[in-house]
Length: 119
Image (cartoon, rainbow, N blue to C red; front, side, top):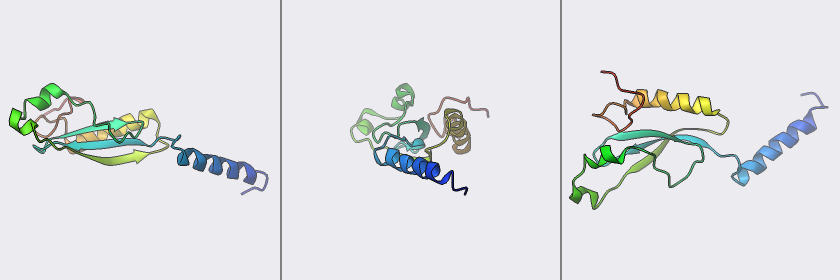
């Protein structure tokens, strides 16, 4: 590395570490939600919120569970991809890729409604 750029590089790396320490740089994630019936939902979150569980259609989900099943309802959230540096466009593309990979847009497998499932 050229000596004239070393201080700038050091400042950049140090500033990045400070931003991470104080959670200013948000991790962009793609997660998989698994419901008690085994169906899944793939979604993205640009804030890495611990209590965000997606925006799957409640209308679709409620059809799969009886009132009794809803009394004790556990879902699982797994982070299946993450990045601090990906652009919005890259995150969106990765979400679609993972929806297709997991086939969570197939109504027999999951609750994603987009992209449309093709048999």
